[in-house]
Image 1 (spheres, rainbow, N blue to C red):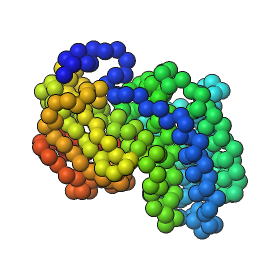
Image 2: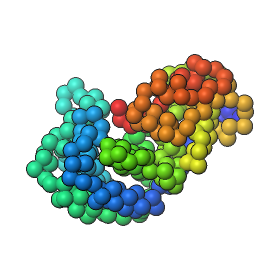
Image 3: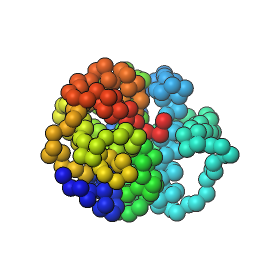
Length: 287
């Protein structure tokens, strides 16, 4: 084990960079195919608690406009935190205000606008510098974050919202492992932050294994400095805990589509159950 791991500058503890740039175009195409295949009644179905499919599409449009305005155009305007707002409260408030403002816009107009603006977002992400500093990723505990993580985070959000639309309209999760493998890899970058208050001797390793063609294995290691955990270790030691779960359980857990208790009941644990329970508190969205 490299005892100097946490002294390396930068973001090495987040693990190897993820390059999602070339996935935004096929993800956008898949989203548009999904939306153009909906029946009028589908737009009124609940996609997430409190929001219909239509509301969720409006939210995606807001995300698209925000990314273009901020990163492409350098726009500094926008809503500010209200007194006492937490990050979660601020985001939920401005998201709802955006959804409410679009009540008068038809589903067809929303779809056409999302197609137009989404294409511009694709081009933005395809040309971005993955190493530059960008927006913080709160669930990974890093601010500012490297652009590769910020953009991969947005990819996971777009993908997750498309699945929520699919599920609301009677369709299964998109099984394409090309998308889901990147989603899972991004979500697992929350492990060091998830375990930040979990003490363990330096060198302690927890391994999370997700089965299936989109799965993989992630090893997070306790380091000697500030109690930080790191994904930069190669995982050559023997983990004290191995958490094994299927891909569907993994992504739903990370997005709180299911609770940690439900996920834990579906999970195989080998080793220290207390550390496994801590790892299963992972959240890879603002929640």
